Length: 195
Image (tube, rainbow, N blue to C red; front, top):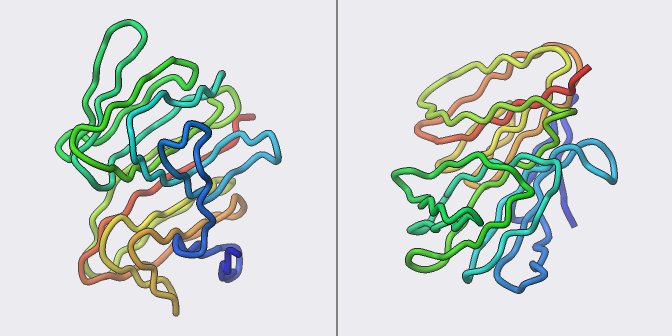
């Protein structure tokens, strides 16, 4: 069971509490962190543990952004013959979710961060940050923000977020988050519904 801690309009999501969902092709596992838009979701953020080569699931009408968190990386083979390697040096790629893609591990298992969204309904921005000391993060009105701790420990109010943990701030009034860390890396996803 996900024992998330809710404080005001923020939710802390512990990766260790999230259930693992086995892929249909048995090639890996997904930890779903958050989704928005109801049962037929408009966006989803997850972490995947990739254990073997295999075809990507198709998400028609969606865009995807993939970021390697650990491991040596993957080679993504597209239907048009193009191959793109995602490695620790070049870890990120944005692509159409309806493209047939075959993923080949470069050297052992990989953990990656996944953002999937419906671009006709949602605007997104994914960014990477390093934090040392105190830092503030502005959240605009009607914006949903998800902060994922990639490495290190992060302090938010009275809570410590460990590597893999997330902080979700739902859309509403503008906010300023105050964060603190000795040394941490985080991924920030900003989402806004289109009018």
